[in-house]
Image (tube, rainbow, N blue to C red):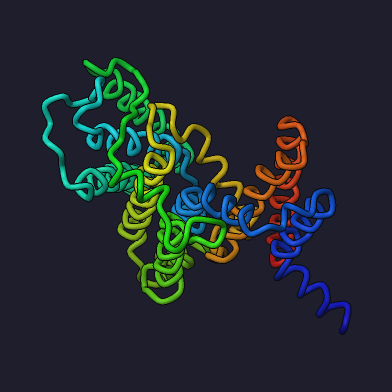
Length: 336
């Protein structure tokens, strides 16, 4: 009995145990890693990735996948940044555009992400194209469209910079005194988004339908769930979250190019899988996704902090991903 309870405990909390062990191992090599300013930096750098991963979780829980996430991040970063440059910047994307309210380009960026999500959902649900193929196609289309926009005169594929302070403050500003104990705005936004997503997952009909679709799509149809309509909603929400992530990434870094977001979709999917989102669908939690993001954040920041080669970091990340998927498959087979 005790062995069974112990196994259940490790199964339920494996992701958090791994995170604690990672932090402990890096801290053993360099105790400075446990300082508050390091934690703040990790949270700051991974807030946008958490938002993107939460978007990917919507799709994964339905049993699908979304390869367009990274390119949507790049598109929305370029769109918002191109409309929020200072009036005196010499290579302004729109030289004659008056200063817009900061919220307008932000909403345009989020709306662009939502539109791509709607298209993904429509292709998957109405045309019955497998999610992997559908989002692979939109990934290429979005990147092409973004590159055409980015190459417009007078910009001609130059990095977009000179962003307005009222915009970059969203990504770099903070509450409290300047120092390690300040709370960045972007972290607050990520926390709010995580809470809203948790509510959707756990307290709404859409959330219940999402888990039902991922658990057994045929059973969901028989039970009266409009699967096609729900899939469109889910992909649209995911796209909007990618859009928000792209806008915040532009604000955080103070610029944008058409290559922003490259490979972010793989990082998001990896964080979800490591965080307990089942590749078979029907299983996943917000805390698990956030823990998965933090694990990769600790790996990227922590191993660099103690001088581990980036190539070794890739190997370690790959091993963690394979182990997580293998563990997930074993759990799935055991239930069957």
